Length: 138
Image (cartoon, rainbow, N blue to C red):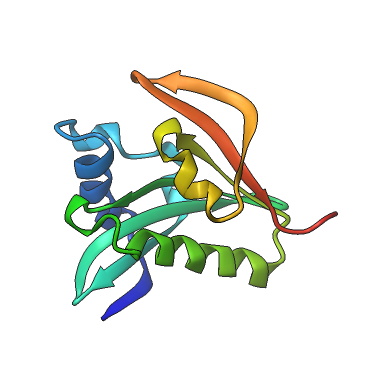
């Protein structure tokens, strides 16, 4: 049975690397902001299989380094974790949630009501687009 809990930043690093930057050193996936973030992990049968980190600002939350172990992708675990974060946003009254989405994952985020903004960029040979979901009007 799957469950979600807050985890240490260190527990996110292996999955971040293995899924998002395979073969790269751990230093590549550590964020300078990790100390300021909240890190969530989804466990299936007590095995950590999906992670994301989020960072609060005044009215919005940005999530980063959202990754699910490849063998568990397409089974709803990532969706469960993202829905959990959306509930946090709603309960805490945030107006906006956003991410730097890999362009090849934009359809996934669209299913949750995120829309692509006009801001896109490339980093380390990967195409990104900023996607956002407005949760309430100011």
